[in-house]
Every structure is written in C-alpha cells, then in structure tokens.
Image (cartoon, rainbow over all chains, first blue to last red; front, top):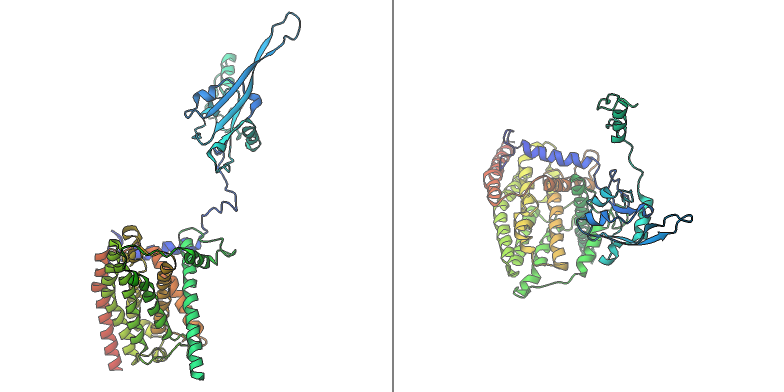
Length: 187
Length: 316
C-alpha cells in the first residue's frame, strides 16, 4: 500500500499477513498467568528464598565470608561439653546464637548454599515475602528455619550422569576398568 | 404536543445510545486487543471478565482534578472537549438504524452528517491551540492537515453511493440498495472506511495523537472529565463511522431473512471489530505516508469509483 509491505512479497501481502497473525493469536489461549488468583508453576530449582536447617550449621562462617553482599549475619559462642568419664577430655562445640539473611541485600546468587559444607542451607521456591518496611526483610534464624518446610525434595539423579567421584575412586582401587561415560553400567 | 414529546423521546433514546454504544466499543477494544496480543485484558472490574472496566474508568476520571495550565486560554481550553463531542451527537441524531428508527429524518442526511462530523476537528484544534503547549499545537496542526487530506475521499466516496441511489437521504439510500452494490460500490466503501478511520485518528492513522512522539498531541494538557470527553468523542466517532458505513454501503437494515434494525447494529459491530483489528495489526503511518495514501491512492480510487457510478447510473 504505502510502504513496501515485504521485500520479497507482493505489495499488500504483508498487510494481510499482519491481519492474519492478530486474528490467529486472538483465537489461541492467552499466555497470561493469573498470578494472585492462580499460583504460578515455577520451574524446578527456583530460587525463591534461602532456608536454614540450623541443626546442620556449625557456625563455620563460610557462607558469611563468601557472600558477595555480606548479607549473612552469624553470632555464635563456644560451649564446653564436660568429659563423658573421669580423665577424659573436655570438648567444645559451637552454638549458633543468631543466623540472619538480609533479603534486601541478597542477590540470590546461591554461593552460600553452594559453599555450605554441612548442608545447612537450601533453596526454597517460595517468593511471597515482600514487606512494606525494609528492616523486616532480614529473616532471623526462626523464619529461615520455617522456610525449610517449603524446600522441595532434591531432584532425582540424572540416569545418564557419570558416577559420583566416590564410586569412581572405589572402582579404581579395585582395579576394575572405569565404566563408559554414558552411565549405562550401573554396577 | 405529542410531536414535541415524540421528538424529546427520540432525542433521549439517541442520547442513551450515544453514551452506551461507545462504551461497548471500548470494552470490545479492551478485550479483543488483549486477546490479539495474547493477553486477557481487564478481568476484575464488575466480577465477570472485567465488564465494568469502563464504568470504573469513568468514575476515576470524574474524581480527578480538572487542571487548566497557567498559560492556557482558559475559556477556549474548557470549551474544546464539548466542541469535539457534540458534533458526533448531532450527527448521530440523523442516522437511521431501522425503517423508522431515527432521531430525526433529514432529507439531506448525508450532507448533514458529513458536514457536522467535520466540525469536530475544530474542537481538537482549539484544544491544541489553547493548551499553550508546543506538542499540543503540533498535534492539532497534524490533525487538521490529516483532515484536509482525508475529507476529500471521504466525501467523494459518500457521493458515489448517493449518486447510485439518486438521493442524499439515508432512508432512500437504504431503500435503493441492492446486494450487488456490495461489489459495485466496494472501492467506495473501502475508501470511505479508511478515510473515516483517518478522520477519527484511529491507529494506524493516529499520528496527531502519537503518544510516543508528541504525548497524545492536543490532549496532553487535559485531565479528568475533559480528557474523558475527548476519549468518548473518539469512541463515539467509531460508532458513528461504523453506523454510517453500514447504512451507506452495507444496506443498513436490509438483511437475508428479515429487515430489522438488528442488522444495522450487527454490521456496525463487525465494522467496529475491524476498526480494532486494524489498530492492533498495523504500525502508525508517518506524515508523508499519510498524505501519500490520501492523495495518491484514496482520491484517485474515489474519483474512478465516481466515474464508474456515474456511467452505470446514466446507462441504466
């Protein structure tokens, strides 16, 4: 019509194509997620909030030190466990007093979860914890512990994945040939 | 006395239609446009699929402060929305939708409606001038230049069908209409519809109000109820154009089974959908493209149609 509708097409074909596209997309279902009414279907391993399983935490501070935003606060003290029998040695252990994550600073990189050697931190897909006051974005130990209830079970292992390092080294010691990498060997 | 009462009743009915039909078109636009863009549109207002969205919008507009800019020409600024809206109401009075369903049957209805519709642009020009805003003025001037270009094919196309029917009265035209006119007057119908769209500033001819470049043009400075009146004028214009096109070119209330006003509204409804469809599908035309479309395509086509109509009418 006025401008060339398409470079290779006849003039005007593009105009009809445009009408066709809008009409067909009208007959299809819309892709809108009706969020507050219908909960979204999140992909597995969604990064919603970080949950703390405080029984596993040894206050080693690795997470706090690795955190790029320095948004993890840990307070702990040492407790002396008396020797179980006469002449034995006293033991000390760390008791976690405070574990808090400031989600107004957190950038959801997940380094704390990766770095935790004792499996005390987990991703939870929950995301509805917006607040009106930025100070309430800091979740203390109790709140972080409650998120544990929402942590999904770990995804099943990939059947095509390579064997874990432990199994591989075990086989090496036993002198067996390493299995092919496609993982069909499940011995 | 009864004549006066009847006239008042007819005016009242037209007035109610004038206030409700644009809302229907607006709601259709909300929903159809949304689904064409894979959205769902308003869903909350009124409970069922957002049917009351435009009522809510109206309430919102009524609550807003009516701001008049300090440098504005106050009287003109305030008058402009009325001047943009009233011509469409006056035009709607003269358009028949059924054999006797008309606000006021005027002998020279086509002349009357086309003349009155052209007045609406003065409201826009006033709005643009009185706003004391360069973008508003730019939009108003664009609007006027667009109207200058598109009024000609608009009138020529209407003249073609009036010539074919041998009358400028709407009822006579509908009575004279034959189904084969759909083919014979097709170019005129297309020219009329496209030129009408351009006069209404509907996308893709919305350069005068182009929100991305001149921020809604003449309406930049308007807020509250006055802005709502401009919006109402736009949608009333769509209703008017669709009714006009269906009465002039699609046979009005002539229908396959029974002649009824329902046919007029059905045809106008389909056309209103096409108006929305075109808006969703096409990008905005540039100024030069607009003028080119009018002067190099629509006017020659309209003139050729006029020639064809003249020859056929005389030869028959």
